[in-house]
Image (cartoon, rainbow, N blue to C red; front, side):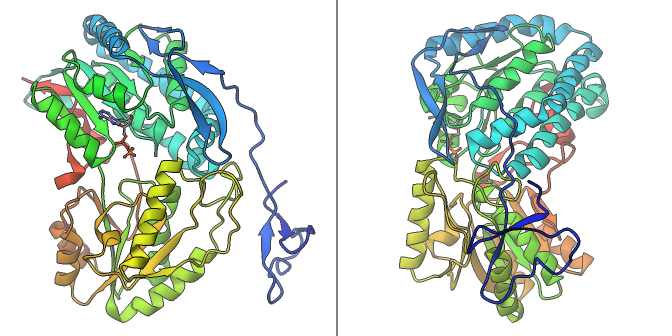
Length: 504
Ligand code: ADP
């Protein structure tokens, strides 16, 4: 089935719109739907997985189930690493450190290049697996996540033998054994952000994916094995917060890197500070998206959609607070309603789907709690998307709120879902002070026709990344990271390398 075929929602008619440009315009009162276009390639998933430690797989132990959030069907049984297994992984990484860090840099680069190429070769399988385990639409895992994963390995492979040029006047050396804990919203991409720079700089790693999305990290362990990466250089262990806590308190790590909630990040910071372990944290956000009246409104509306509804809003840098200049507020809201109504919510494996499944029941409950709070605190909900949600799985129709006050909970706290809060402003000064009025500082977006305004506002926004006339664009050469409670340290670019070297 191709996307040139259309189906009638009020019946089972399937129309082929080839040869006509007008037949997809529905008669009044009738909504045409795209026919289903599911990804059909089968991907093998083992019934049970152990940990990948010291170049070998452990026997699965004390397992838990990872499920497909779009169907609630189990995908596999995953092992919960005990403190003893964390210790074994740390020892393997320690033993591998000497030989790996002493390898000529161009040899290290070859391994990283091989990983990148193998990711490209297996990209379809990885995209399908990511979508099954996380609920994100296949068009995102296929066109955004997995290509970026390969790019991160390619980019950092290129740096491995050029580190001296990255830090002029200083001699970089590896930090040592790195413990890396990652979340479920970009499972394989976060693994790439952590592993690629660490390996390029000569470190060895123990990485733990999130408990709801371990499958692609385990596939990455297979890829490391396939390319002959020396044993112990990358160890992938699975488990929940208890495994994460065992990693955070293990004295054998020279560096910890964490991406996830601010709440857990604070616990890890405490554990690391008590031992003087190096640390980078990428935490939550409540990123402002500012639209001035001289912006191209249609482009800005597209940017708002990208900013908050992309990946079900499960993005730490989601543009979740929209500030619109007061004189264009009604116009923006009207256009946003039309665009929001056109988003397709449903089967993440369908190539037409824009908004997939929420990653877990716990996450959906949190989103629904915030939606209820928004209404009870007096904001007005716009639930205009007409999609019929599937009967099983975890779903949230994308929506937005108007009449939001800065004191409302939905304007202050991270929802991590497809829920946008719209506020207004009159002057640039007011936009800046309202945008900065948050404990977070991860990202921001500015929409205006005036270049000088962009530079002036971007300088005054307390955010690690400021996108101008675009949003949610990533590149391995651009550093990413936060201010204030959004964390510290940068990932990507030369700045990201700094987090994985000691300088002499
Ligand atoms: P989210 O990704 O929903 O923001 P978390 O911050 O809870 O959520 O999860 C991010 C990662 O941190 C996951 O891999 C999770 O298993 C891990 N984790 C959870 N609790 C702890 C903890 N106390 N110490 C270390 N890691 C933890």
